[in-house]
Image 1 (cartoon, one colour):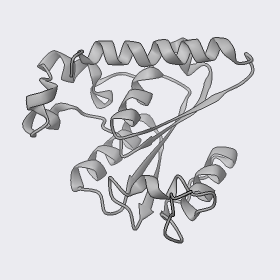
Image 2 (image 1 turned 120 degrees about the vertical axis):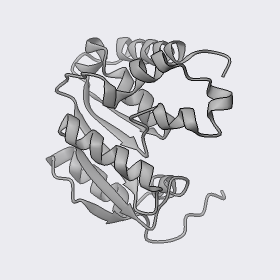
Image 3 (image 1 turned 30 degrees about the horizontal axis):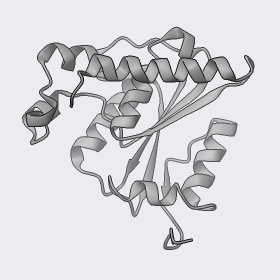
Image 4 (image 1 turned 180 degrees about the vertical axis):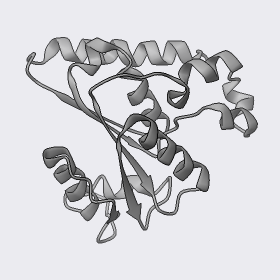
Amino acid sequence: PEVRMAELVTDVKAGLKALLREIPLDTKLVLIGHSAGGHLSVQAINDAAIADRCTAVVSMSGLYDLEPLTRSFLQQELMLSPEEVERFSPLRQRTQTKTRFISVVGKDETEAFHTQADQFVKKFGGEQLLVSDSHHMSLLSGFFSAKTPFLDALAASLSNHQTPGEVSGYSAKVNFAT
């Protein structure tokens, strides 16, 4: 990237703070992000001003420890330093917030995503939602449909604080054509 991780996190926090200035003070947000977006959502609530206005963070296939990326093909582009790995890996931080965490992972994800999701939930007391018939790239397909078991479970979880554990990703093929 043309910018370092610190600048990415700072930009996300600045954007959220700008949004929060535009909405009523009693309005609470649910931050939802996929993959790197899930990671950035978790990073954002390290800022108390943002955490106080968020009722939950839903991290879908999130990255919670950046160290494995330093051993992947992505390191050539990311060029993560050991200091960045330590500073921006949620599993290596002491995040203290009352914000609720829901970690969503596709059942067909790689083992690394399952391991990090399990570790994240154990460390932060969050909940995990396993989506069958889904992997890293297909997980979002059930998110863009008006009515799917995945969205129903997520909505129910956010309203009554009961995550079912595992749900089907989608009940039919999604047609994105208009």
